[in-house]
Image 1 (cartoon, rainbow, N blue to C red):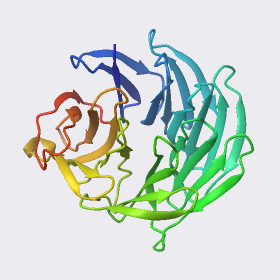
Image 2 (image 1 turned 60 degrees about the vertical axis):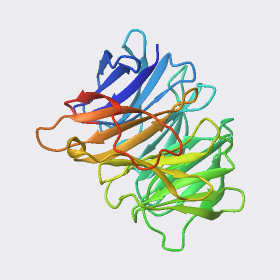
Image 3 (image 1 turned 30 degrees about the vertical axis):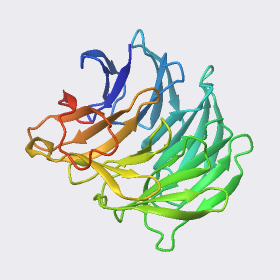
Length: 302
């Protein structure tokens, strides 16, 4: 069974079977909206971040909450397991990130990382590094063991950072800013050398993602209701997915699969229209298209 996640403004999390679009579980327990979620390496556990200032760890099979992790003093906006799934990192509007022990639920470290809310948090492939991003315009690379800041990535315009992710080999970071730009940074040199444009991102924390099967493309959500896909090296747009009449809203999140050429997108809509999660089959070189990705509708939001 392969599951997809749908986080909702109504404080629930829905788990979907990607092969047939059936909803498998609804996880309820948070007292306010859920902003982010992450599977453990073996997909048996799920961690979630909520505006109720907590992180929760869930048993995917039973749908029961194993632990509620408390300590943040404001909204928890981003959360992720490390590759070994024994640690969780969470980033918050309290400008700190915390490291948690999965087995005991203990908070191991509290790091005052930024001067504005943290918008995303990520581990490197081996778990030795943490990447944090913030509305203060900075991305920082941290040593997981010591919580020492090793690098600070900052553009000349210092625009608020809406999202950031390590590349699969952790040599690069994909950094989205609220001026409709995504930059590929060389982490060791703290310099960027690729810029991807054409999408719209000026207000929301639209996420971006690397191709996990060879690193040939990057994809991003957009406030124009579409998913934009670029060739990593040439910086050229190779696909735009969606954009039809049913796609009014903001593509707030995208994710790529490790074992197949699949891309998931979540569209946050307004009014009476339900929010939508779509699963796309990426085919490099097809060019711009609206596409007919399979979808599930989530009335509570994404």
